Length: 550
Image (cartoon, rainbow, N blue to C red; front, side, top):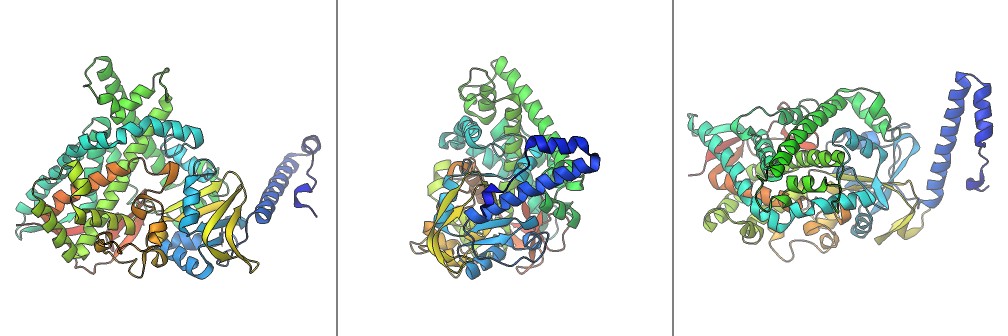
């Protein structure tokens, strides 16, 4: 029987049934029609998508999604399955859905090259982004994404970031001054400092000044509503019920809108807070522009470009809604990602005092604070520490997309299909879910070698430090941390320069140790993104013992 010629009731006969019955008949008709559509889609996916091997279903309702979601190391699960089933495999998901997982550099390069067009964000992701940060760059797809990205690109050019290097240093030295005061007041010449909170403050004040010409003043102790909204997420871990709803929402995105829960309310509050701040900054900047207060070159700042794009005659026009959404995206990205990376760097340096000492020696031998160009090219060990941190601890550990069209994905090595035959390409049907575990690829022993799980900055300093397989990974420095293709992180260079500048100031001036010794366990908890936390601490606490370097 041809699966695509199954008779479907005509619209007229369907509505005749609806009119002749009551509410129960109406509900039953809709349920039957919905079920039929879902079955037909699933049958089409099974026929047109290459059926691969994969782990067995552990739950009738959730497949293996609940196992992945509850794991403390999702990347390790994905890597283990790649070892068992091949560089591409299928996982059973919620309510009969399946997921194709790609762990092959060639397949991943193909996938990212076609992102925003062939591979798009899932309905659940779009619904979440729209409700929290609006229809900005994170939400946009296709031509809308291309237009928004092109409008913002000048704010992240090398020339623009070069001018912002002093902002990065200013934030770092403000934190240094506060830490000096805390240490001076202690009796033992050191102090226990909760560093994640301070990295959050550095990141927030930096993005405020660099992006919006506004000093939030969090490093000076000012109460900042958006920082408080961000911080509430670390203190409110998702409940089991919330996790179950999120899994079901992958099939029924409307669940996000109709079922209340605490984290949904937190995101709503965060969205309102960010929108209020964004509108206030825009109003101020528009007034300055109208009064000709802005200095020359300001229009290539982020806020300047956004105001410029509001003009109806602008080549890359953005609506008022889009402009506010971009500001919310930049606040969120600027606050979350760099602060997480800086925190992980301080944890790894505390675990590896030999690496910390070697980095400090390089920085002290160099002398004064490096310029933008020097940060980029003249401090090899700083560069190695930064990229090893980004490799082991990507702030966004996973990509999940939906195929918007049929496609064929090539593989660098053949995999076994469910039929037992081998294939060196995968047919993907429209509607197929695709997952890439960034953490698994960045830490894969098959790709990065036997020491892939270890913090070894030296791997970045020698010709043979990065294996041949890792060199096949297309992305910044063979990492997927900033992804690749049309959706590669626009703020990558901004983030790396801020990371290097702040870390250089802190390591030159302070010595870091884990409060309870180098073997202190560190766990992963969810803020907005996944964050480190010293085991047993509240929220996202990372207390380190800090003393001045003499």
